[in-house]
Amino acid sequence: MDQVWQVLEQLGVLVALAAWLCSLATALVPSWLSLSTDLLPAETFQLGLWGTCVLQDPGLRECRPYNNLLGLPPDIRLARVLVCGSLGFGMMGLLLAIPGLDLVNGCWRRLQERSCKRTLKAAGGALCVVSGLLVLVPVSYIAHQAVVRFFDGSVPDVAPRWEFGDALFWGWTAGVLHLGAGGLLLTSWGRTGAPPSQHPPG
Image (cartoon, rainbow, N blue to C red; front, side, top):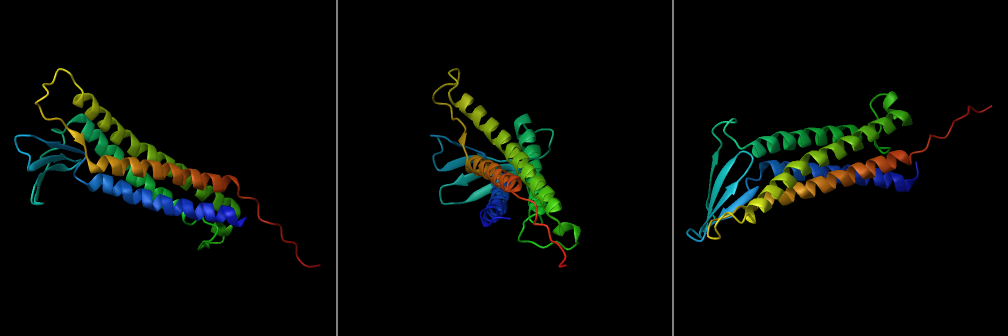
């Protein structure tokens, strides 16, 4: 394999790892949406996938998990499923792409064959793309809902409105990185040539 395509596939794995960590932050950071009011300027309410938090001015944070799954809003339930699915697909993509690297020697002779490595790398790249789409859908949908409610003319101007939280930006970053990692892996897979034939000395 040409050295340029080796660099591409290695870069794809590194980007996929960074994307998975960003997806993990998206799932764990409890601030998908934030709300602050003029009546209580020292407090900020935060809404996450697993609970709600109140952030006070001195830096104190008090969080409470949701009591039950059925009582959650439908968009939060959907976001939970899709983000957890993104984490699962992203991890599987990494586990398949790493042994598909030309730099890595397989534990079995079959893994050392170029065709098997190409298959692993292609599967890893495809799973990274799926993972990116799965994380982009919920963060974009919740952001869209927040924008629609923010500019809703039927709501009085004095009423507080939800705004974007940090987790949405983590999610967008994770989605773009996952798509980029999948593109790098699939590009290096498409450019992988057949191994040179070896003839016994005669």
